[in-house]
Length: 446
Image 1 (cartoon, rainbow, N blue to C red):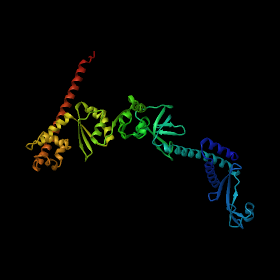
Image 2: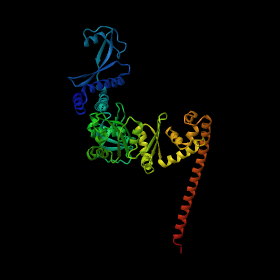
Image 3: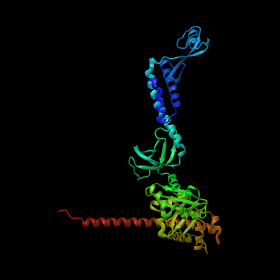
Image 4: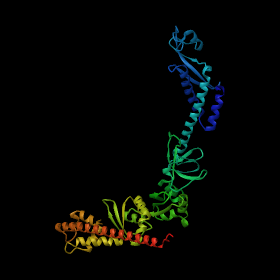
């Protein structure tokens, strides 16, 4: 078997793209360990590949002595000189081991080592080939499914899309083509070393980079992105060239560029908004397509109260809060959406609170709103200094306003609870009436 070893090594090296020297080195080490198990773990054994014979030769090292007391570790000076004429007492001589007695063990070891080395070399090859492709989008073919994960054939390697990196409601079958973002390349991973993602924000931004030359060239920059995979995404873009419209560049002629991305993401809605260094302007854009009437900024809390027309409220919030949620991710600001009618109602409550001080009223309530006081609770808990800075309000007046705000907050809460109770009663009554009407129309049993 070992006489044909060289041909087998060369064939494996050629087929798998592995350096033959690496296989030989691994084989030598494996043969040495196999021989030690056969002849004793304390034996000093070396293994070398003989190119001419095409086989692994094993050498056991023995000490040259005048009198042999242990034939496994000693060799007489006369016998040593047969191997090396210049041998002297005290030297160590490598004596070739006869492998005929355990050739089958060596054959099995050789096979196991080659298989193991192939696996290791393939992992190394995959890592070297894909380590620089991390953060790129690759194309592959779906091969199979394992515990919810999708195994993808990339050509020279297999990759995995774990369940958490799959977009909800996206379904694949074997042999389907798939594009995905290379999220991770592991050198020593068990199983697939390449982890792909269809859900990452980078998948979205890389697709735009591929579709929009201005982004690839650095003229247009994606400043931020937010995504709820399979549902909706937002990207904020800016241009380094005043002559290039960043939003227009990403949309493309008749929407061709953004539609290419939407198609790849299987219908995911994408909002492209202009980035701005002005937080208020940026947040207003991020809430697109809703129109914004006014913004009240709290720089300390990094939050904004955004007032929108009543007919824009549901659009600004979005289905199940999606639009405002994405805007928060995109801008990094906490956003509270309020309708104009709600703000008018709040302004009236604040006006009632400050009117306890003679000469104060609607104008002061509007000023408080601009200072970020957007509830009676805010007014009840605000610093006295904030109120005393307003015309006509001293410390005594400020304390009275705070106390009045606390009373009105309680009153408002009671009104809301009463309204909610009445609404629940009306709903229950309507359901009972509908049930009675249904019972009256049911045919009698005869």
